[in-house]
Image (cartoon, rainbow, N blue to C red; front, top):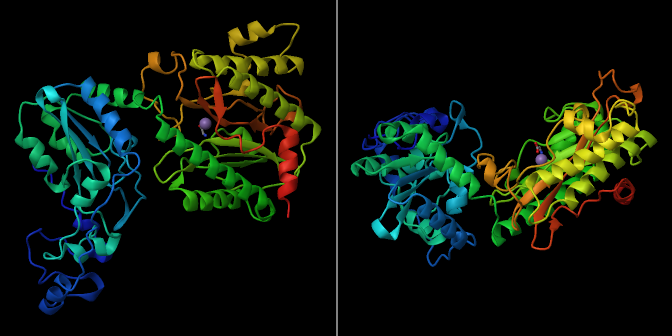
Length: 498
Ligand code: GLY
Ligand code: MN
């Protein structure tokens, strides 16, 4: 088991030649520039200042991450646990896709470094010793610094292992030795979080078992169900930045009308990149009938006054917690009568849903409450025949779902659909407890080709989505910075009109 974790020289910028680690620089081809002279190689080795950062304090989430690791340790005594951050993925030749560390790894470490691995080694009665395997700073002696694709000259300065240790409160070791060091200790039951590091999975294949690995993934997903105070703060910040992003979009609606939905996507994304790490999921910028496509992320359509814009977008913070907010906005600033009627139904459904979010309530309650309101409206409007069905029958048969389409919400956190692998008994079939954060997002969608509804309904889609924290008293809407009623939406838009 000697998986080579040497930075992938084949990923070298400018096609720098792949070489063995111990081969001297001399003779290496430097892409466009040809041979490296002895003099240049010698020059690149020296003359660099000592930039080691000393006296670093732990990052804010370090003590919280330590608590999470303690829970992990208690659940799997005597077992070795391997939690990779994930590897860079090649887009083409020497360019990679943007890296986003695995949520399990981030949750347990507070770190986001590519190619890293957290390992919990069983340590007798005292639980586990946790070790963080990271790529250290680039060696200047062997040329890695400037000739390797992951050399710091190309990708930027990394933390030294000592710096990482101080910041994260975990002993740090060279990740290139991870597979070898794991292999050196035999006979320890081992689990890995699969799907992030094929090389490590292969290196450990002999001691891994898929079912046992799944149990680890499920546990780590469930571990994120209740957010600690620091995480709630991050989600609050994600919502605040998202409010700003929506405000930017409304300010720039004129540009979107002149161009396309892409202007909206770009406008929101600029805010996400400035205030946070990125968007937490592909923004849904759905104008007109595109609003009836649940995950419309092509965002290449026209933005027409008189129609609605369904904008579903969330800023992901620098620490990778995301908001998930939807507003449906009249592109010309005013809802027409039918748009307002449909919007009002969705708003009332959301109100009923939010009211059902409280400790001791069941996760399913807010979905049921919202669906009931929507079913009642569909009957009232005659889209479902009230001479044939009453609301109980509609709900029993699920007939409203032709137009409500999706569940009314999900957990939110490091992933937009957070805790997706948690056990049913602790998530969808469970009671809500303070510290959970979830979305409440009912919608009504009338497809363009739906012959069962009057023509004027066709092509209208409305969703309203907020991020709700379960508190000891009930709940708090973290995205309340954006207006929700039709009247408030109109006044807000009017106030932002240039
Ligand atoms: N915001 C997208 C979703 O919840 O699926
Ligand atoms: Mn959502």
